[in-house]
Length: 116
Image (cartoon, rainbow, N blue to C red):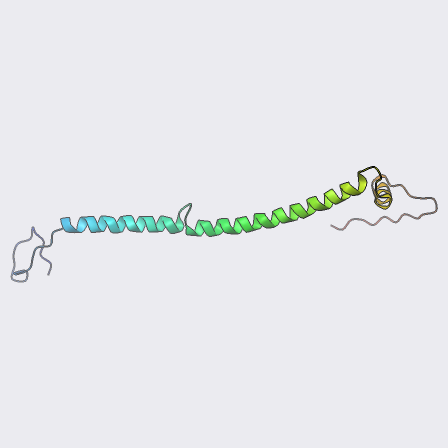
């Protein structure tokens, strides 16, 4: 049986030192603080699990960036074909036919609907 400092001495508690609750308060508070900090280190807004989620988002954004950069490189290549003192005649002919709908005499135009 545990003997507290305020409890009377009984035959079961004779010879035992009284348990002082004051001595347990500080370790209990430190354990509580440690638990709080551990919880927030794992589950908090900037904790371990949030860091993993941010890593996933970063990888996704890097893939998007690569797709945008490749599309940008393709557009720059098209611009290079049309700009300069002498544009590429084949590409210019392709763009005129596509955008303006021009065709040469004797050609048959077959329109294919775009795939959805």
